[in-house]
Length: 85
Image 1: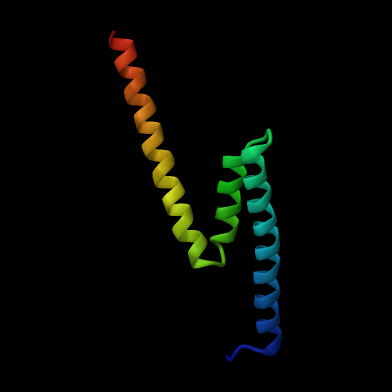
Image 2: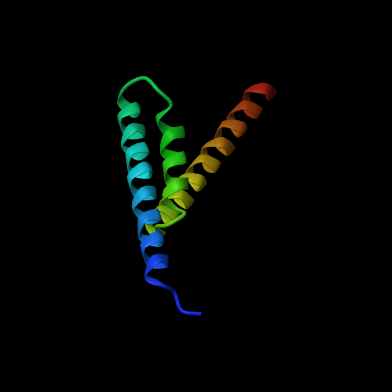
């Protein structure tokens, strides 16, 4: 069965809604980096939402996850070194 024009309209509308909400969240997260608020958490949530529709967001989300994982490992290593001393 071939896609109908309504299917294309739905997909386009879904993409626009995700882009607007995700973009707004991303902007709010960047603003929260300067002002008080959970900026990094909001940025990660925005990238997660945007990754549903956009490949560039999936790439950025993978980079963020890798950096967070590396930072967590470094913090655990420092904590274990301090505990041994």
